[in-house]
Image (cartoon, rainbow, N blue to C red; front, side):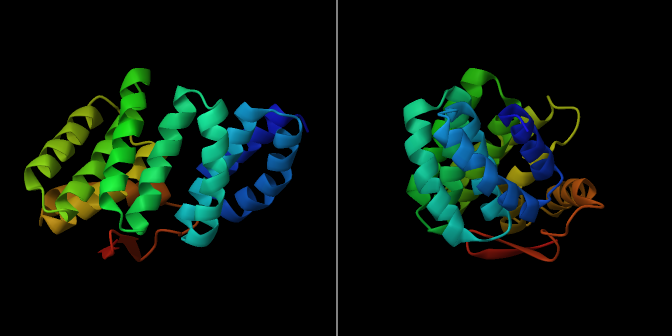
Length: 214
């Protein structure tokens, strides 16, 4: 199978939430891309692999992949690669409870998202920032961030897999501020997107040290 076909297969597996297959297939594809110096494809492998470990809660492997991902991304990555990397890097700091570092990483991802006019990543970064600012007891900054997320959400006709994955920050913010109507709308979007797929999000979601009940 050609590398481009392998990457497309990985993308499909990831979008279908077939995470165990993503891990298995990535362990085959990633070494080949590195050996052949196909760095653009290697960065995509790292993106799917790191995201998968994060999604299934395997934070030890997530941290390990992020270390290698960082070296390659900062050396060979284009703006889009760095946009994704810094978003994941922000999530990495959330679970280490390094909230200042998480905010700085989210701002870097947001800078690239605005540059690329990528509304999906603009939305999920603002959701992330809203959660982080609320956790740090900065309600004004948190409110501004969530309102910006809501504004850019209006520009997108449907909820994508990327936005659903980034909704953790919004769920945390709305749950923490007792915004029941907004929380339930996000919850409906998440559950609708996950219908018929592997139940990795069933039950509770851990974010910023809090359990968010779906």
